[in-house]
Image (tube, rainbow, N blue to C red):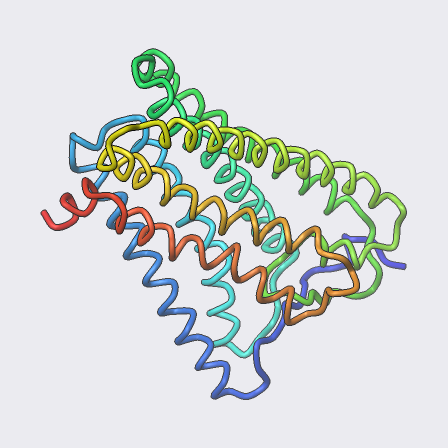
Length: 301
């Protein structure tokens, strides 16, 4: 048995054995990354430059876009660099930093998606109280709480995961550093500490999911009572982008981490990780811009 201090690097999953296929993966990842940079950059620029978009909803969208950029920038550049340099290695410190940022960005994003569901609930179900319930100060406080909760959970996970002793193996069956893959290298029963932290995180995910679900039940009930078909369509158009983003993010994350061990194999784990780490940052700007007239008008300007 050797402890964590004797491990200086981890080996990530290789996408292909031949040089040509690695270059193909690099080009594919580069295209995806540039699309994410372009889409999210346009959202950030539109919200920052148009004073009409300086509202609580777009303030939260601005922060969500920052998290999407951070999330995809944590994983894809390293995967592209490994494809080009014909290596699978990531340093011990680099793995810890990457894992910290992944947890931080994803949990903060979940919290912000919950805040956005509350914003839509107040806007549709209690429009007369919107200014008092979701003023600038309240919005800033909830956004700061989302970033803070992500940071605290990331610190907990890193402290527990990288304090474990590891066996003399350093191969991870994933293209980024992931807690379940790292725990497989542990030789100690103290991994139960990390399981407890994972249980807390699962409770957070479950609480956010229930809150979002209840919010949308109330929203749909209120929208269906609107007599005008045009007003109903307008109300749905403000909710559907957020609902699509939430569904994509939560469904893939929950299935990836709660699926039965009997159906867990490397290709499926890789596909699911790609869905919840790479697809949302690329798809979110298009989802929001396609269904949002104000953002489309600002982008054209």
